[in-house]
Length: 331
Image 1: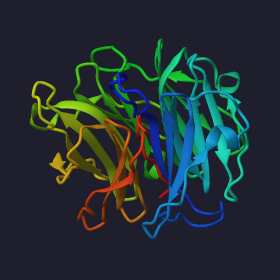
Image 2: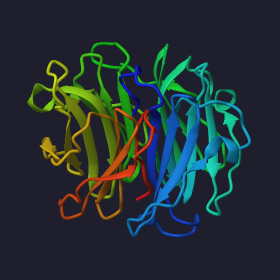
Image 3: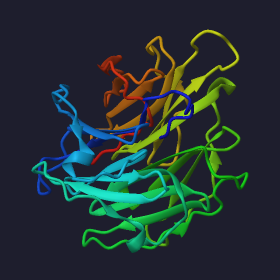
Image 4: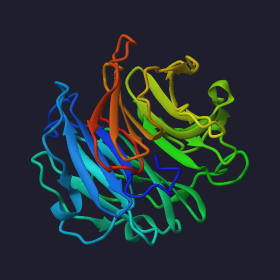
């Protein structure tokens, strides 16, 4: 997810949380990886351990990969226990790196030479299942999808048409890949309605966009999606821009495997600040984690347990980490 109000300086341009086992052979754990791309082009990483504690300190991803390329948008997904990171540079180029199970990095390589050039990339989102990494981007040419396979090869970027019921590029995009390799795409449309569609795992065709509606007809700021064995979690931030008090709210719903939806429900207890970005990741037990960035770049966290109860809100970092937020995981 990307920050909608770019006037705020020094905010995290993208945050991603990813559930990662410590080695490819190990079953998925409840550890989660956070990524944040700041408006100044710096890219950072940290981990939330399964016990609920956060790793001390935040790592500099660009330094770890020995690159001077500035990344203004980022996405991530866990593939076979390894963290795959996507980054968008200032010219709309797309880059890819892997964090191995031992904590080492491969370095960034350009995606276009392998997957083709979809145009100047504006937003990126990613999801995974098994050994496949799914990537969706918006660009000045439209909405495109590709897959990276275990052997390192990429499919060519292919248009996801139509991009949106209004034929305009979406404002925000969120990708999650669920059981059976069904890829779910949730978008905030140019009309600020929220839509869902999914990709057939064999034929590669996309279902029509279906409106999920907007809770209480509020203005949606950002959307997030995460898949688990139980279903698809969708979350969003809403606001009332026409009032002079903070009206930020967070809503959530689930699409079950039978195709039914729970409908929007408010999470409640939101911090008393304007929230800008939201990201989500889900786990094999159908629990889910969410991180959000505030208007001043602070990062908040909440979780939904497998029994449907919410954990409450906590602040992860009280510093200028503003930007785009997203979460993803390996279930």
